[in-house]
Length: 167
Image (cartoon, rainbow, N blue to C red; front, side):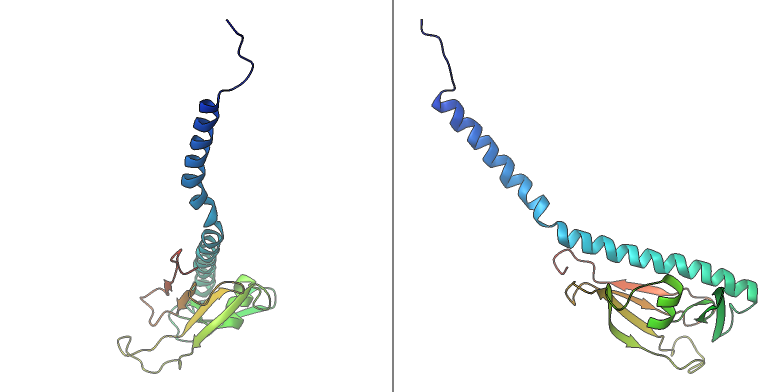
């Protein structure tokens, strides 16, 4: 009998086929990492706004401003933010001040809708202020929109285009 010193051609072909199958099934998981990272970043921004709003609402409640249509709340030494019903207004300046968001390099404001405080007085007719934000290097279809509170009994809202195909 002759002693075998290597792999046969069939063994090598089987290993190559197995590696090919693994590559085909695993590659799509790694290709989509950039859009997944953008989605996670936007979800983090949404969470930061929600958390910041909780703290700002607490400060507004302590000051007795949580039922006012328009007020200014001091959140740190020398840092004031504008609020409606205790929650942050949907403006670039107020979000930047409250959350320390960098709108010069990291984030872009795509759209802003401002409201007139106190007009109209009924929540069903009210048009709340909104701000739509995306990452600076992300496509315009990958955004988070923050909507102000329209009365003292409602919290602010969010809508997001957080589809992996869009980001």
